[in-house]
Length: 280
Ligand code: AMP
Ligand code: FE
Ligand code: FE
Ligand code: ZN
Image 1 (cartoon, rainbow, N blue to C red):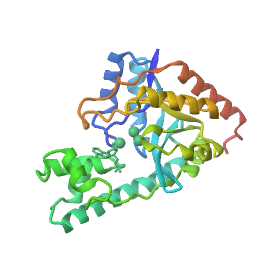
Image 2 (image 1 turned 90 degrees about the vertical axis):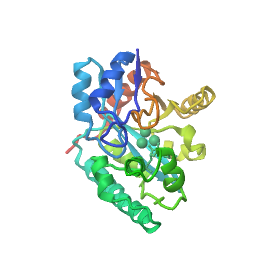
Image 3 (image 1 turned 45 degrees about the vertical axis):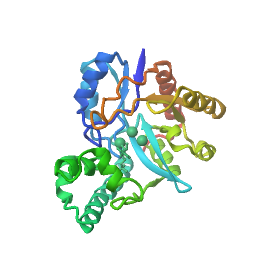
Image 4 (image 1 turned 60 degrees about the vertical axis):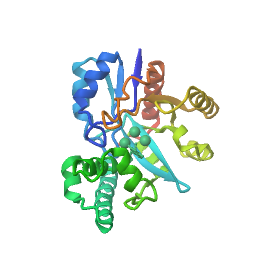
């Protein structure tokens, strides 16, 4: 039995619906899935329903954009209560940050003579957590770029003319936010960050786990982070980070996390719930 604990839908910058993801996961044979859309949990309800119908275990989740010591990192949140008001309020702030950033990116494009309308990006994105992939798709749709890669290369990559830095949540606050919503906090794709020096500080703040298995981790990278997990007594997670068809072939199926890790995650969640003060 295996799981995929890192998936995106059209509720953020993926292209699949929750139902489409579940159909594909079912064909692959996944026993458990987590939905980790960026800065939103809106897709969780539909994904839970689709998983129940397919007899797949569903874990609520999201992927928070955070920073520590000026280093950007992504924090995966698992088992969060998707009705937790503090959690919802805080991610709402970052959804607004994302929307303002789209307007600023469109203004910067307009300033260099690229006539992209922010409203066209919002219409195409049709979600509360829009990002650069949506701007790239809108540029291609408007015939202003030939491909998503070209859009990133010419305009959207860091330090290109339409790149706008994004306000991020403090990673230490993100860990606390996840915990108060009953969830576990996991450092996403550490191999892409190459900032192992921040791990001890995250662990001291209560980080629960680390994503050792990821589509972009080589076997050696996965083994390196398994050692780090062992050293810091962190839970081990893994997922494909599938964004649908937006980045070529769908990635779902490239990572098959052994189900024993899901059991360990659930045991840790239950242990945390027993020691937490009763919610008021
Ligand atoms: P944002 O959160 O708006 O900064 O956008 C980040 C998203 O853009 C992530 O899902 C990345 O995978 C995607 N992304 C970042 N750089 C590129 C690139 N050069 N080409 C395609 N997608 C990219
Ligand atoms: Fe993404
Ligand atoms: Fe990420
Ligand atoms: Zn992701």
